[in-house]
Image (cartoon, rainbow, N blue to C red; front, side, top):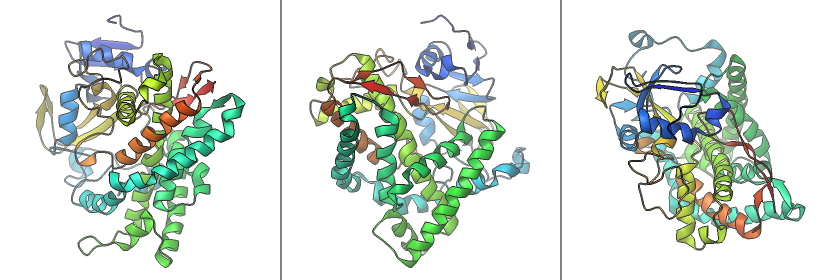
Length: 415
């Protein structure tokens, strides 16, 4: 395990790492690299990214909750003070869509927005969607069961999360394919070494997405319905209503986060289970074993690998000094593999009783959609293996070149 691959160079003494994130040998199996980082240099300066990264479970968990770090910095300092460049002209629509994103803002704005949205995502509320998720999953399997084969992402994984989050928010279901296109282009902005073409595609998607959401907001203002968008439009918090710009940012982030990661996770989970050689019947025997299986697939096959934070004040972590305005990165997926927390961390062991995974983050930015994502996974995974008991991989799955997300290009199955 300690043999270093060609694409990775670690100088443990200097805590410096050189790693090409777009190398298929890395993003195709990042867990192997994370294991090497844990062994040699769990806190490191990534030369290509020009930033400090943390992989240790305790550091990542603490930093996600540390209020000396935040998702934004310009609420307490100017670009001039921090020496930050001006925003790119060709990503102005993307920047506008992100301006009020729950993922990007800090209290008190974050508290106000999250309070308005939170009620819809608490477990007791999303649990009411269980029959709808089951019906949808059964209907999709009915379409391809007789074929003896399917590409699972397009026939199943893509459809369930986007349909459920669209219903919840109040976006017509037939918009699903278009929402997926916008979302895929939009998240291109988060890729390492993104190109100008990626940026232009993300900006175009952000503009079209925002224009569409604006039109739906106008409809709901005139004629409210029993959906989350109407609730956000017509509910006040401490005498304030959300502005159109806040509503657009919030709707876009909920639609993107509400399905992008779950699509990846369904694919990752099915792959992990099939490659483990374990009997699916034993993995989904009852509610408790199902839950443990799902959590273990989230631990070992997390869909979102990195979250970044700005240092809001001078601070030292693990012997590294940060000044106000420095950016740090937390590798959630690597924290899930910390050998100090997990025995045999690269092995899929659903009967683990160890630390909870950090795949949904922690602290005030803990994933608001976690109850919905967990519910979907706990319903659709056992159902898929019950309906198709002889499921197996038709060919080796190929991982998407979208690091720091982790998902499959396609998942071809037979039974």
